[in-house]
Length: 115
Ligand SMILES: [Zn+2]
Image (cartoon, rainbow, N blue to C red; front, side, top):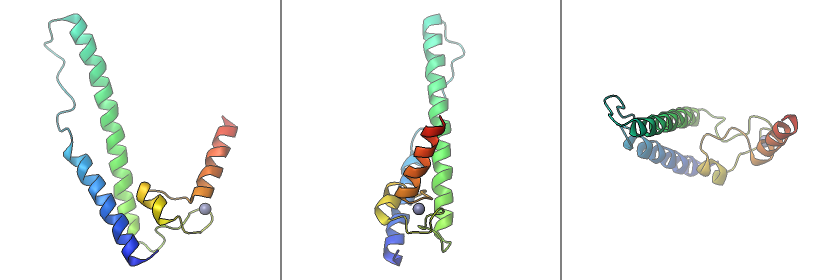
């Protein structure tokens, strides 16, 4: 991986983080004081969805942040399983990837077989 490619992925990643941080600060709304029971129920459901989305987003942000941290280490972009290069295209699509395509699909195959 060249210095330029690494910089490109980093920019991409920082942009991703920026766009996520920019969304919803008020995704969790207040449901108390809602006079209509149907509305109340609907809002409870919506709130549950919002909380789940929020958690998912936080997990994604943590993932991207740890990828950003790993970028300053020398083994970024190297497959943890086989030691081959993960590939720039894959890292752009998923900057937090730790495995190359081959190892990732082997892992997923294993998981489906176990299930
Ligand atoms: Zn691999």
